[in-house]
Length: 154
Image (cartoon, rainbow, N blue to C red):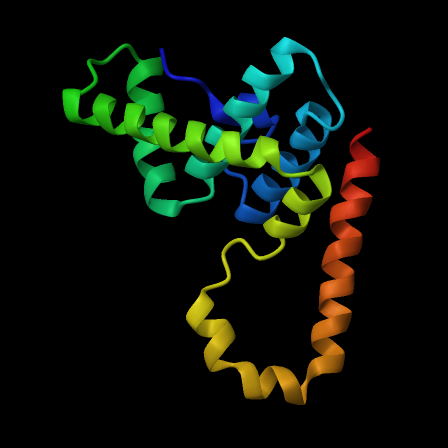
């Protein structure tokens, strides 16, 4: 049986990336070891990371949606698809272990830059320097959204 990541993150399957990020941040704030030491929290945290890693990647999400639909309708899943899903789970487990070792603050700050291509940052350095005021303001707004989202969910 395939885990329904939309249910896990408490979001609609049509949710956009920003909604997925907000839901992920809200949930990991609850289940991160800094806030929750229960044995169940570790397993739930791992599933949250798994959900985020798959739903935040357009190609993985598309393939996952197909797998989920097949699971819901009881259609047989192609062996390669099942193996791919298991590979995603292994990758997420490794990432989850790394995330659990990070403080919650470090993890939430790291998420600010998810989806920003590195080459875009490097290529736009001159423009960024010219508009450093708006960059800092945008960073402050993003950080405020992250911190505010945590407290909204509690």
